[in-house]
Image (tube, rainbow, N blue to C red; front, side):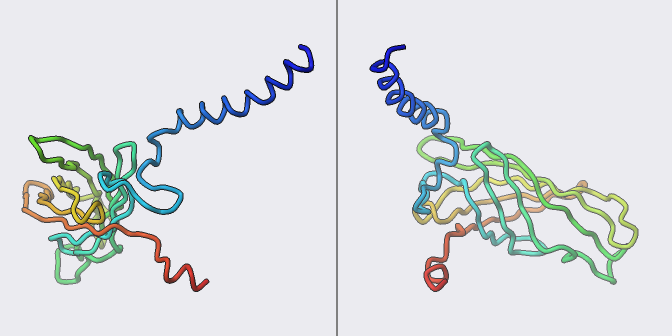
Length: 174
């Protein structure tokens, strides 16, 4: 190549790569910008969740690939008064999707937790939670019904989530 062509190629290549990388990553992590702001129509992110459950506060993480995780403290279901000392549950893992029903948009999903008996660590009935929530408070909250199934028993529940965000007051004091 001639020098003029090399200079032109050297100028065009970085610009083309920038456009290609931008196009390839469009939609990945689209819910949070570099400034920490989120897309008010996306559930992607971390949430503190109040649940009608034996242990109410949970943390949920919704990923942009349609998977999610749920956690709460370990050993909260143990009790010497229960058979086998109660149970311990695992991290909850599941899937979610956006669905449109008329004018309403819902986030529907199911996650499961594996349970083991506290005294001998043998497997017992798993927990399966299904939910149908709507985003609230300009995307900073969600709310809606859920159902929890353990073995053959299904109980109604309810989930109310609050988005976890950067604590700029704390960060600014660092």
